[in-house]
Amino acid sequence: MLDIKVMPQTTIRVKRNKRSSTFVVQNNSMESVGYKIKTTKPRDYIVRPNMGLIVPMQQAEVEVTLSESTVPDSSHKFLIEIYRFDWRRSLNDFKQYLRSSLPKPCWTSRIGILYEEEEERINKETVECSEDRGVITFFVHLYILFNVFYLFYRFFE
Figure 1 (cartoon, rainbow, N blue to C red):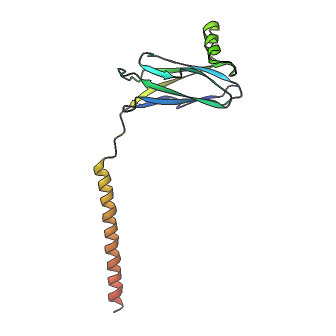
Figure 2 (figure 1 turned 180 degrees about the vertical axis):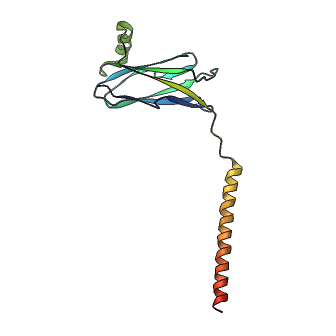
Figure 3 (figure 1 turned 45 degrees about the vertical axis):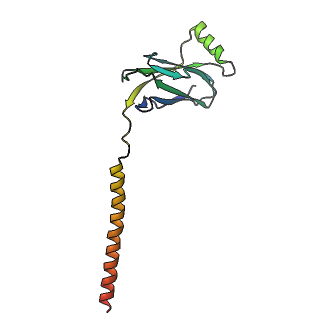
């Protein structure tokens, strides 16, 4: 029985400043498999590698890169197709197998794409404010400590 996992399972997140992201296809079974990745907009996305072989208990990392002119849309999807295939054969054999026999995939998964605005850089003002709070807290504690010592001194005078 095949045990295939894709991470992330539902959505690839692409940040605006990077324009690329990766996902992992894991083969957690004792059978070797071949995979092929298709997309609804092949001209907008570069998928590398878009097909490959995964030996038993191993994984493949796939990179998705947006083309320069691509305007990401949440309706764009990626289809991951898994085929039973002997990993000891070559990738060219796998390509030939897909072309010649038009096999039906034994496992498929669809994942979407989410275009994220780049995370807000840590605001310099926020950092300065938190540093100021640290300094202020230090001086407040120091002030309290001196007052305690002063009261202690006055009490035992």
